[in-house]
Length: 297
Image (tube, rainbow, N blue to C red; front, top):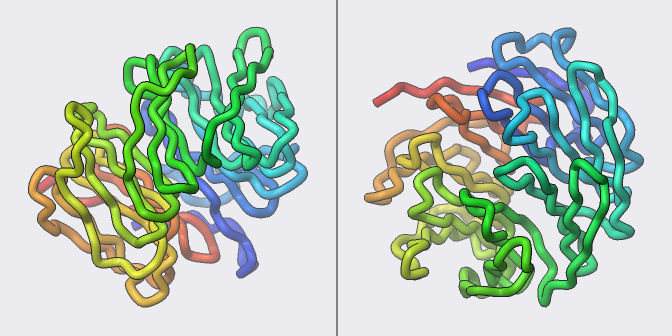
């Protein structure tokens, strides 16, 4: 296990984690207004890159799917920022006029979608920096583009997952995923399953062909804050605020079988798989991020 010490302040929290496409860098959205980019091979902070510019806590980070050195961040300060981490510079800033909570980058690299708390989704063209905004019926907590880039999936405060055609932004389907808020979602790399984590402490696995719930993963007592699939779609992990069950539980997607436990000292709110390896990055420790390398079998 490698530990990436951020600071010794107990008030610091990691709001989001994101690997770049080749898995050579991992970005952290921090509560102290910073974005930090780590080299996973070098856990010392002197090898990391600090990106400054946001005026409030950073809510989310996501990498350009086509450029391994470009990433974006959004914050409650209403700003969406795009960074070149090598140059430590902000390439552009767009203001949504709302408190930003989540965003996603389209697979072709042309568009960034940003959700704000005022029930709006904003689309930013990364070449022209022009923004188009749409109202949606529920507040969006998390979002992800479909693998083909022709739809946008949104987890909402009502518990529904809204599926909109992109770029038309017309609702094509919705899933009643949870009776209360849906906080996070993830589409598996095969496009077979959609995982949705909710405030009811349950992760639902949905078949994306017929949109039926094929399995639920339980065992936590607090809201699910993150969910992610391994690079091959075989395994799933979820993070929550559960103070009593701090371990990370890894399950097999197709069978639901528990296959591995990672013991932690703190509740893990964010956990992200490496894009090509059985490496898992996770937050929760007040001092920083941890990355654990899991066995191949």
